[in-house]
Image (cartoon, rainbow, N blue to C red):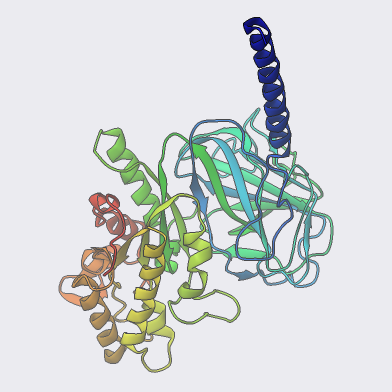
Length: 442
């Protein structure tokens, strides 16, 4: 074979290899995002279609735990009605996706349309001009969520600012009760008759409610944050008695503090903050089985399976003390908290824990229960439970009567703070605790 013929043969072989490689690549690319497209009834949401091509990291911009079945929806659900949830973002991004839950449904939930948009203003169901986007699920506008399941939408390009109100609207034409919801949202949301998912005026949304229905998470693809902080607790984290529509829960204040510190050039991690608090929640026992799942039962769903979680802040245990007949065993309560820490560490998540706040002069207070609280707090302060400690108890207690909440921070029920109290809780959090990773072991 001459040298010229050899070069020609080599060129021909190279061309064939390139052609085959291109065909394989195109075939794989065409299949991307097309598998595992059915809604799952397991603990995790189904896989969405491929995200839009954009730089950034997926983080939680907002979240709320599913709590139970909405009263009055057991038979019909919200058939023939549109639900427009309003949620407030902790961080901005260039694309968005949502998680919808049918955890407490007894039949499959069929949604034929869903949409996302920026709100036109404060306390309104109207959408900002040019921001309405149709949501899809594995490429389809219709999704069927099995009873007990949840689903993750496809990502949609949308410029979502930090600190924005976002409208997420769903429509179900069929009977599908009960409705999975999160009560006492401290945020006004809406509903109305018919398919209003594309409505931008908001005028047809005639019902106003203080609850979130079906929606449990809003994630964004962002260059503003490198991870998520999950605040995990009871009504003290959920923000009970804070001013409605003001975003004055203590995690809201924490997020604003972190963003202000980053804007001022402080050397801190760039994280979003989401709220996974549930009123009445306990560490060990479901509050009303099978609803209001105990912390040890919902930790995987609400923390470990959230996107990009780097830190979890746990403030849980008061309801175990207050609602257990007699007194809860402090050793069992501490064991439950340490189990949450072990789960987090197994996933490389750092754990910051809060001391249990005072509830003296409230119905249900006894010396025995106060003794349990003090025992648990002593272990927390000694560093034998969490990686780092925020002393909420010290921050809000009455210096002259440490078993009670200071009047300046009391909403009036001797347990839940007012807005000033929630701000005090956030200010007690050392932002340096967000640095570093999980301890190998306690």
